[in-house]
Image (cartoon, rainbow, N blue to C red; front, side, top):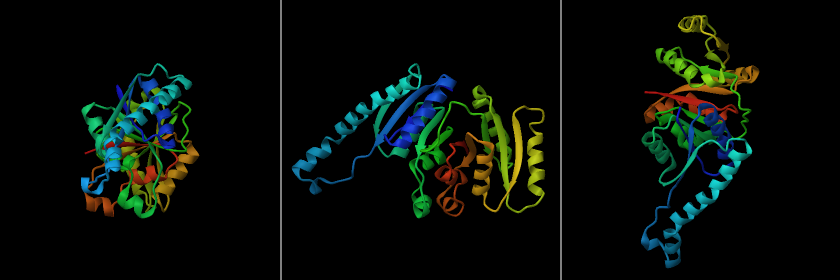
Length: 279
C-alpha cells in the first residue's frame, strides 16, 4: 500500500479519522494525501450587489487560506502522536466533495480512503446519505469510514468480515488478509441467520472449507431477527476493531428498495467500517 487519501472538512469526525490514517500509514509505510473539497454557491450576476460580487469572487482565496491554516494542526497532530515521519501531501480542490474525492482517488492511484462519519437518521439516511456513504458505494478502492466516537490504540487484533457466502467473498477475504497482514489479526467471518434454519450453517461450513488449515480465521453464523443488531452485538462481545463488508454498485431503484447494508452499518456503528468494492 502506497497512498492513503484523507478527505477532511475540518470537523471533529475528520480529526478522529486522521488518527486512523496516521496509524495505518505508519504500519503500511504509505503516504497520506489530505484533501479538502469545496463548492461555490450557484448564483447569477443579477442576484449580486457589488459588495456580494466581491465576496463571491474572493471565496476561492478564503477556502485556500482556511485550508492553509488547517495544515499546521494536522502536522502537529502527527508529531504529537509520534508520526512526524509519515509523508503528507495537501490538496485543495473546488467541486462537489463526493465527485472530487472519487476523481482524486482514481487519478492518483489511491490504495485506501480514510474518512470520518457522523451518522444519519430517517429519510435523510435513505434519500440523502452522506459523502462517506456515497464514496463507499462508488470508490474503486477500499474505503474506511471512521465514526466520530471510535478510538484507535494502534492495534487491529480482531476484524469482522460480513459474508453472504458469494464466490467473490472468498477472493475478498484473501485480499483482506493480505491487506492487514502487518497487524496479524484474527478475522471473524460472520453471517446472520434470520430464518433459523441449518441452511446458513451448512453454507458457512462450505465457505470455510476453502480456507481449511489457514490460521487466524474463525467462522460464525449468528441468529437474530435483525441483521444489524446481531452484527453489532457480536462485535461488542468479540471486541471487534474493524468491520469489513463488500459493497456493490446499485442503480436508483435497487438503492431505494434494497438499501445498502454497508452504508446503513457505517451510519449506525461505533466500529470503523471498511467497504470493499466489487463490481
